[in-house]
Length: 430
Ligand code: CAP
Ligand code: MG
Image (cartoon, rainbow, N blue to C red; front, side):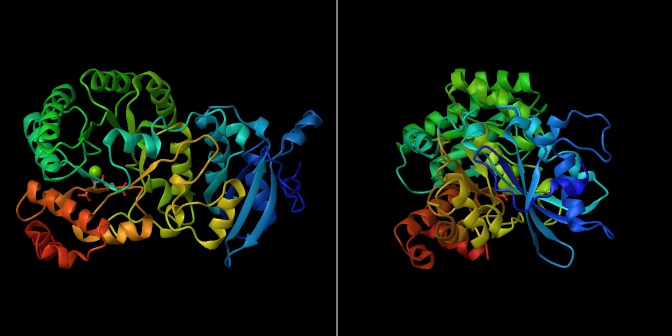
């Protein structure tokens, strides 16, 4: 088959096809159909030249470009349908090696970005999805429908175990529901994982007694896979309910192993996405955050950082939170659009996932986040709490006051008149 044989704009995908949408820029001198066919060929059964005497039946396994729309002078949106048999059930690495593998490096395209994957129910059935999901987390925390408030212990690195536990304690007493380790804190010489977990869970138990609220600690287990499982088991044994993992650094295979182990561990899995922007940030090349979010939900993490639109990390608005018209139509293809962000939309048996908004946030941002992303979110502030002029305890109080005000429909400035910590925060974080 020649590259252009992989293009069939009359093809109607079957219910069992996997459908991938790409943004593609053919290299100069190459016709769009030739480039699109090359992407479909290389990501399914073909290569740069015909294979002599290949069994004819293999042509039936070829992926098909069934949609092409020029989007600008060089760029095209293309959709490719892949026969389900090309993929192995429950094997994310293999799926990505196909539809997100060699094709990014092909000379025939100058740019290529995998924007979305629509999985058929046949493939979705092979995955467990989140163990807790939004409902399970809310039940655990006994928080019915307001956003959850979290913080990241700061300084992100350098505190010893007791100092870490003290910062966490102040954040919980001030009003945070969740406290997490930062993405690059694991088990360094100055702060060993095991003793940090013991110290911080002791603080957590004290904070629960004093506040009468459930408080959760999310220790970062990111490490080699077997070690990660050992650390998760330790957390469970110590009475912890959560672990956090850097999903991009650990890799999809490790996440699938962790999710399998979690059938017995029954921990809430918090997905930090450090490193994601190496894949997603270039709007013309790489893999979208939407794809990363779908894979994380399919595998079965319970909570995922998705950006904040307003914070310090750049997250193109339409990718995961505000679906634009075309994206909304696409969403309706595989499930009814019944919410504002992809992680909580209905998806066969796969439970909805909590969206985590974090990165450069402070109490003044709370109304905007709730207005634009809804209540099924976790609002996390690191510097926005520990950078408060009166310190962590006041910072956590200010964040909780901002959340209380928003839920009560009160303007922050109004509420700040009777809540000193929030007043200070609004003055300080301009
Ligand atoms: C936030 C954070 C998170 C970012 C990651 C940080 O701290 O701890 O890792 O939120 O970005 O290290 O930057 P601040 P994202 O609140 O002090 O910014 O959530 O977009 O993946
Ligand atoms: Mg961080």
